[in-house]
Length: 349
Image (cartoon, rainbow, N blue to C red; front, side, top):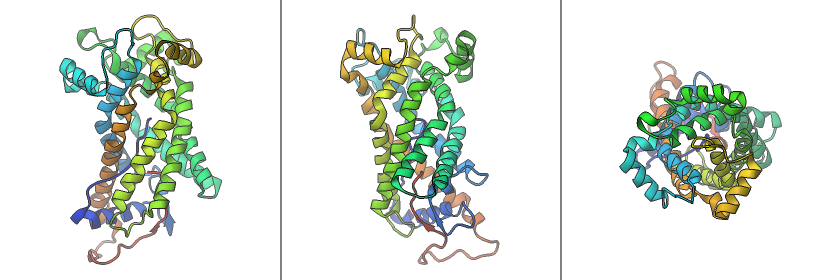
């Protein structure tokens, strides 16, 4: 999925600094007494840079797992290259070095700023337009965000998938994500660049809805408040669990999407569409084909969430700490409760 958000960093002696960081995050939206984090992270000059850094950290941590996932999803069982997740990791490193795990990295790095802006902007504005912060509206706002970002996500993932699967060295077909999309456009036109769009929509729309709904419910249940010394571990748990649930909700569709986008890379195309891909895959390999690469995906969820939330916490704690205080104002004592707007439900990180 384009976004595996959220959570944590270590507690202990740094917990008060982290709590202040969360309060700084809540101050990103002016003139607000009670605040959801989806509003704080809506794209703006103040929040876009932390969002970009957050996305970069998540991509760097999670991309090797994504490469393994894609290779397991599309390999032929007639001549399988990999026996499982661990063997795939080992084989890639042995044959291509560690850099092989980062094939296609440029594509998600190019698109993450636009995707972050779209997801948080659409989700926050949709939730405000619906007028009530309810579980159903959280799902609908998340689904709307997932739908809109497919415009960028689909071509980006097409290039990423092709680069992850192409041969290494002089035999490679594409020099990078832009060259990949340019070649596809010249050969297949706009329809080729948007290959897999229907399956991407079927994956992203419900999975983003599930993510935001699950995160909202979990943060409310766990009582995530900025004054709580356990707020970071709670957000870690909520974000990681929500990410796992969102992947589980539509994972079979992701397998189909990967197969459609990789189709024709080596040899003639095999599939005429989503239904044909499902039928052929099931007939050849049974229902287990739709769980290929799932272990790698679930292993990726918590590391990505940890990296992204640790990044945004550190950035907002240190980079925005002085900016939030008027010039000449003394730093408050660490024993005092942090000032700022009340953090309602951080429902969109």
